[in-house]
Length: 402
Image (tube, rainbow, N blue to C red):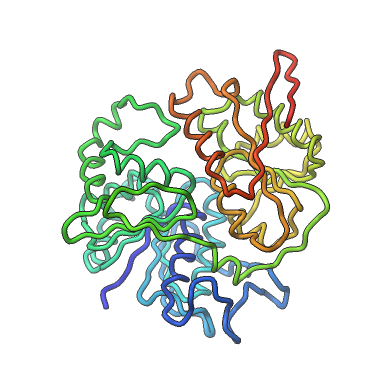
């Protein structure tokens, strides 16, 4: 059998590759609990906790771990995960932990310093060329990634699977369906010098991300997507997460989930900080789970102004919440978690609520598509997710929730 190759650049992408592999296991139906003798997410005898990474590979070194852990779940045969390592420390740390979980599931993991200074791009392409040529299926988590687009412009797999890396999956499906060039929803549509140079690569990659004669395309997602004809949509129900972790211990209060909307230039920082403070008061929240891209300065301000305990998770929030402890109510800004947490926490009694972003929160430089996209994310959340509003009412910064 020809191999299958997954390229991941974020912890959530790797989590969803694990979820996809779980559905492919020949001896287990999707959503089934682990069989006797299989790991259930327990480490050192502590139920529901993730095993600590024992990866001692030095930073900057590429490596492969081919042997499955004895007794591990039977993952998809010949699936190799290539981690195209990012540069920011938070993402790298979470990816190290996720890589160890993937090895525990029997997957082969290769850590690739794809952004490690001069010559890294050429070196990475040379090292990945042989497995790419052999791969029957390629799995990617971010079709907007310039790195992935470059790889797809050089090699054309027979079967392609796209897994979630956030709400951008919804925009990807829509843009492919409309035949548009691939542009992240929070960016303006004008082409800068870098985009002009890479336009031929992006154009070819877009064609290879679409189904064609001799090529199938699958979107494996927990999000409501409208895929064009010819693309197979497979539901991600977070069965692996539920089988491996929890159920969690519930605390009496609420937890807030942060977002990188300020860092991506979409939401005004002052509006965001005031709304977080009001939400904490209104819902009796005690913890703020930070997005891995949130700045230290912003998080410090939130902690000082609100008294919230700022938590920087060492795994994707779906695993942190399922492992617990977690609040009985989880309040989030529009993001992937308003779709994924109800699945991961199904049957636990946790209530998820989404805050709708008001137009006055947006920066003047935000993409014209931002408001509509964020409204779509909130509006398409699962029916059991509460929808809340919070509005800044003027220069005083007073907010209200309803």
